[in-house]
Amino acid sequence: MTIDKFPINKFYSLETPFYYYDIGLLTQTIKAIQAEIKDKPFYVHYALKANSNTRLLQEISKQGFGADCVSGNEIIKAIESGFDPQSIAFAGVGKTDKEIEIALDNDIFSFNVESIPEMQAIDALAKTKNKKAKIALRINPNVDAHTHRYITTGLNENKFGIEEENLPQVLDMLSTLTSLQLVGLHFHIGSQITELSSFKNLCSKINELQTQFETKGIYLEHINVGGGLGVDYEDPNKYPIANFSEYFKLFANYLELRSEQTLHFELGRSVVAQCGSLISRVTYLKEGIKKNFVIIDAGMTDLIRPALYQAFHYIENLTSDEERCPYDIVGPICESSDTFVKNFMINKTKRGDILAIRSAGAYGEVMASQYNCREFAKSYFSDTI
Image (tube, rainbow, N blue to C red; front, side, top):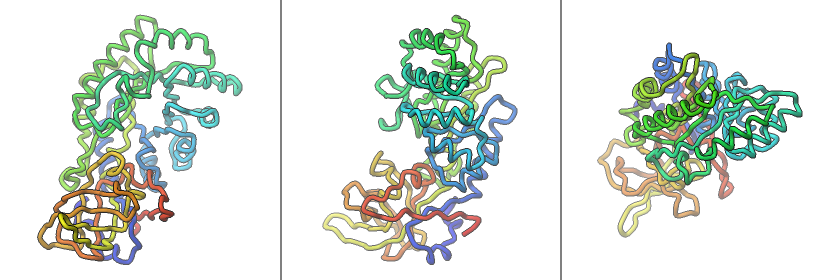
C-alpha cells in the first residue's frame, strides 16, 4: 500500500482516528501464501489474536484458511465469521473449563496443550460429554527467536509449552487419559521473527523429537510450527508482502515430514499487518526547547505497540510535500509512554494534517482500549469507503 493509494479526499470528512484496511493488499497477501503452499501438505491457520475485525476474518475464511484461536470467544468469533470448526486449533496456557467446553462442543481440529494439568482438565471435561478430544502437545523447544523479549515464547524461561525433559512424564500420564487422542506436536517460538535461521533451528529440534516419539511407537498426524514470521515495519511501501517464499521453502527443505503427515502454520501478523493503517489528524504543533512535538488525535489506546514493545511504525504525512523535518510524534493520552516515534523525519507538518501510521493491521485495533474514556476508533475498508 503506497501513499497514492490512500483516498485522501474521503479521509477529510471522516472523524479521526480510524483504522483503514486495504482489502486489495490483503487479497494479494493471501494469494502469495496460497501460491507457496500449493501442492504441499501445508495448511495455514490464521491467528485471530493479530486482528479479529469481522470483515477481515470473512475475507480470510472464504479463502480456505483455518483459524488459530487463544480464547473461547475467538473460537466463537471464528465460527461466526465462516471458519470451519474442524480447522480451528486452540492454543493458550490458561484455557478455562468454559473455553474447553466451547471447543469440545464444536469438535475443533486440535487443542494445543501446554501442561499435565491442562491435559487432565480436557480429559475430564471430554469424558462428561462422551467425546474424544484431539490434542497436540505444545513443546517448548528452547529455540531463540531473536526478537523482543515480550514476544519470545520458545525459551525455557518462558511460560509457554511443555519442557522437553518433562515429556516422559507427560506420555506416561497421557496413557491413562482415555478421552484424549494425541494427533500432533505444536511449537511456537515467538513473533516478528526476521532471522529465518531461527526457524531452521526449530526444524532441527522437531526432527529430533519426531525420532524420539517414533522409538516409543508414537506416530503423529500433524506437526504445527506456529507462526512468527515478521514484516517490514521500516519500509512498508517497498515490502508490503512478507517473505513467504523463503519462509515456506525453509520448512520444505529442513523439516522431515513423514508420509501422510501434514504441516500446519499459525500466521497472523504477516497476513494482516501491512494492509492496515491508523489514520490520525494533527491536533497541535508544540515547540519545545530541544525538539518539536507533533501531537495527534490517535494514541496508545489505538495502537499500543510503541508503548508496550518500543515498536517502530513508519509514519507518513498524507497532506504535505514540504521538506522533511525532525519531530517527536505523540498522542494525547496522559502517559509519557504515549509516544509513537522520536526524532522522526517527516514532511513539514501543520495543524489539521492527516498522518498514516503504517503496518497497523496487526495488534492495532485488536489491542485497543478505552483508557481515559476514549472512544474506540472506527474501521473503514478500501472497497467500501
